[in-house]
Amino acid sequence: MESPFNIKALTNFDNQYWRVDWFGYLRYFDKHGQRRSEPLVDVFFSPFKKAPSSDSLNYKTSTAFEDPNRVQVPVSYLRLLRLGDVWHRGKRVALSHSESMLECFPNLDISSVTTQTLHAGAKSTHGNYVLPFPFHPYHGKATQTYCEVVTVGEDLLLVVPHYVILQAYFSSSQYVFQQLFKFGLQFDSIYDPAKSFINPDGSAFLHLKKWTHDAAASEVARMAFDPTAYQVVRMMSQHFAVQEVNAEPVRPKAAFPFQGKTNLEVYGKWCPLDFNDENRKAFVVYDILSCSASYPFSQLEYFRDNPGDKDPLGRSTHPSDRRTTGYLKPKPRVSTSSELEMHPDEEPSNKLDELEAEARSGAAFSDLTGKLVEKKRVQAHQSQVDNNAHQKVEDVSQGNTGEGESRGQGAPIDFQLPKSEYEGKFVFKEPVCRLALFQEVIKKLQQAPHVTKTEFIPIFEELGHHQGLYSFFPVTYTETGRKSTWQYINYFKGFTKSGKEQYCHRRALVAKLSLSSGYDILLAEAERRKFKVENGWVELDDTSVFLSITRNAESYTGYELARCLASSSEERGRWQPFPAGRSIKCLSVKHPQHTTIASGEYVDRQIAILERHIAVPTSH
Image 1 (cartoon, helix red, strand yellow):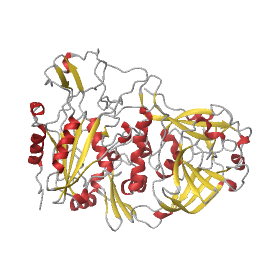
Image 2 (cartoon, helix red, strand yellow; image 1 turned 180 degrees about the horizontal axis):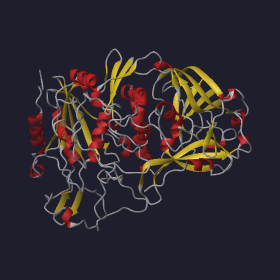
Image 3 (spheres, rainbow, N blue to C red; image 1 turned 120 degrees about the vertical axis):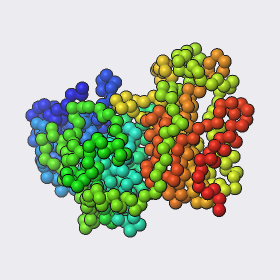
């Protein structure tokens, strides 16, 4: 059981005044190697030499910054902590903002041309540190944390730590904020993509999941309907995985969740960049006070799975009804002392009860002024979804075992796999590469007259250091919070790597075939682990080919494809269907018999099997 965090640890249990200097790296595991239910973040504090004023926050000499105190804080506490805050005896001291530390950047352009992502300790193109240590020493203990650096004219830089971006744009709900810091983030734990949509006129409907607070509706809608925001949030989880694989400090890598013009009002500190040119300087942002960037919707209606009030006309929640309403038992959740207290028929709590601090008002978003953001009851929601529904997705669980204890390829030649792991399996004379066979299948399908275009879509390619066409299965976790092993191709039962050896992520090939009839066929094949036995080679996995059919105009988004791989990894190789309404057909397809590989019949047999399952016109 984890010990609850004591808020007085922020101020070292003493009577000094403490300044929040910087947010550092994330800690996902405790001293025993067990995964925490919520990561901790390093927060650096320096003590003031005397009771502070608003103006004293602008001068580094006000605190003993040389040796800051590091406190590991649950990441959700960043909803209330801000850089430059003053804390005393476990409480925040509410000082007004000094005029010298307030700035407005009107008509600021946020784009790939003006904005770049850099480490806090990086240098600009002029060779100067973007955060010069003589004027801003606070980031010295965590120089690899990320910042967005915006070029404002020829001589000015705006430096925004990524933690500050997440605080401003995604902290309305404690639950949503916590989800951002998870490995293998699942968007459908925050909102239901299948039941959420935006119309051409900009009106949108959002179906929040029951743990998501109503106050987060606008920011979740931005996440759902703005491609930039969606990409920022999706990539955070991937960056965490890559950092862990590469043994780097784990920290958020994000960006602004929008592109285009904005008026940005911020609180922070000016820092000279060049001793020889006083005009060259950077403004480091401690808090975003207001932003005028546009939201993707013109008006928003939303509903949440637990609406926050009891509806006497609502659907019963008795177990007898669940059998007929498609209710699925949720996965067990890790019990912790800091678990959010939420009930299905109540508005979820949005408080950090232990914090004895006044609530933060958060950033002001002027684009929301005058836009209707309204909560709708379930009946209104159901009628809208029914009008936009497609055919129901078919079950994909059949014919795909995944073989539970699947482990990896690549153990030393003298390693003996337990006989129970391969007993009864088909023995090949030579090692078989299923991905190579899959490429042959796609190559031959490409020659068909009704196929107008084929392409391989790499997903999570950074997990394999960008190996061309390949996708990679991401890190996932078991129901008890332990890291899964299925995603590793070189993990064997009974064998553990040591030293600097690293486990390699299992590969996949994801192919999209566009047909002249206006349909897209999505096919995916997972890599299987092979093991040398006395008479040849055996495969330790038995995954199937994934097949899905959509209309050309409704092809899957990058998020949906990433979620497809993540779901399969979570289920140890079982392909999971796309959300209802996203596919005309979606299922797992068996492979031909093993003997067809040696006989040379495999490719033609596999194509014949696939064509039997394609129940849409393949040509005009």
